Image 1 (cartoon, rainbow, N blue to C red):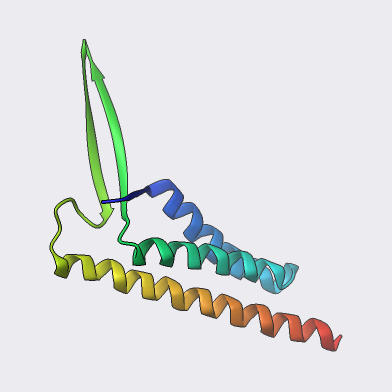
Image 2 (cartoon, rainbow, N blue to C red):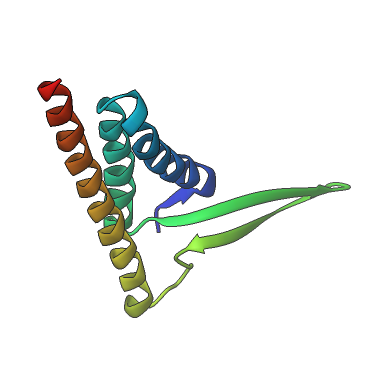
Amino acid sequence: MPEIGTGIFLILTGMGFGSLIISHKFGALFAVLGAVGFFAISLMMFANYDVVSTTTYQDAGSQWNETSYMIGAEGQSAEESQQKIWIGWIFFILGLVAVAVFFVEALKMGKN
């Protein structure tokens, strides 16, 4: 299964919500940044990516990796894979909301 790091997932999610929040104060272009973040996450979820965190441990002469799954799991069934599709749809809808916020904010600026 393809994987995306938990950090990238959280950065894109934070960027999406953060830019939506500050778009009201600093301008409509920040809503576009949020839309890009949300659409990127939704695309990865639709492409069946797992969101994972990998930690490498070292001991005297030995090394091992531990993988923690935030979304998805290794060897998952088709039913469990559907959870990622729902998450993808949620982020897609959030992206559409961000685009709508952009157009509303842009129209407000045009009236001033």
